[in-house]
Length: 320
Length: 320
Image (tube, each protein chain N blue to C red):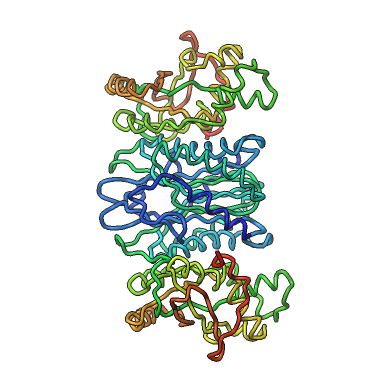
């Protein structure tokens, strides 16, 4: 998929630059200044069957995931999701499938009070494109830029479980039967960190959601912020299932490069650290400090306080 | 494609109803009340290769058309287009193709000062989904609802040329060689009636863009407005190419049911008729009165002042 990432430059070569577009292509969301009191954030994500989810994924999981990955982008901006447009292309009309798909879509919409305001249904190979929008108070949004040397690096939840599920589905690992359902749920029903994102608006210096993998997405923060970072591998949060299923090195590699976690990765200054941790303690969502931003413009990793080389599979976005 | 139209009901069965959504699913655009001064309109349209454009359509035409059909929806709301999100799925990366595609996208964007604010590129069968947004002064937008018995029915431009081009491509008619390029341009490079739409905001009682065909889209206005209409077939604007290529009955049938015109169909009260015609005369765009709204809740047609039965192929949306 690397070449598909690289073609983004075609779409940034436009001559139109509107004053009301505060942030255009290149972050988790665009930011529009449309009113005096608030900004609108906009994101678009496509899921293609067999590429972004296994072909036998349930309709409800596909509906959930299509919404979740978009709300996750909105969460990474610190915004409150509000409106969705949904375009679905499918090979044939199957009422049972559609009913389940809509159940998956609407569960998340209801939870976050997001209204589906439009869409399009067309015939073709299964694919879903959602454009989600949200709002933030004027000028108060997070982006990938803003991390500064000395800031602490945090992540929500545990990393790598979705990638572990995918490895099981692709028969690259064999999981204990009791572990299959929990990790498949992490893959099929990612939880967008919407409330955490809104809390972070007051504390974080930068944020991104982890869709491509920890290294790749940290690379996006480093590139946009013009900084580097060190990751303390021992600190990366791993689930008990992950620790019981893989040796440490394999588990860390999945956490670093697996992607599909939809957890938030963010940076916080020393001054905001206590305030952030106190505020987030009310949400019940685990946050873990996994390293620190520095001025090096590279990503390094340490284990037991010693530098270790990292798997470079996750560097494709940062190596330019 | 009828069954794909009918499944829309799945997406309207949501429980979330936000106060800031003035118009949800079911019109050319949704309308959001996000500021005190203006509303935002939002539309999403997908083009699938082989369904919405012939497989051998040029990349530039595909880029143009993907933007044009969305701006046409914004025009039908009387709004000013502002921002685009573009999701493209393609089988492989082809730089020449992409370059031409982007040229098609950006030509229209530059003309209307619309900024591409985000998107997604994924691998799969060729398909493009665009979400376009625009603005109107607060409360000042057109919709399909609002037509009243006695209002006059108008259409911009000529009808049926795009359908004629498609018939030529599908070898159902054989066009004179000099006619091929002009009608293919109508099919490949539809002109969204953006400036007409904004002018109509002050005069029209309802509006829609003609994508499905005159009868079907008039059906949408009649259904939303709870009225009926009579179309004067002799008044339907046909190009000289159309008149020279088909007998009158065939030409009228294409104009009634062909679709892909992306002209605006709108209704104007007797009181606003002169004002509308005067204002539009400055735009240089032809507008033609083709009938009148009535209270019948059906669509009738007359020729030489006599009622004639119409081809019912265009009635699928209205016959519920």
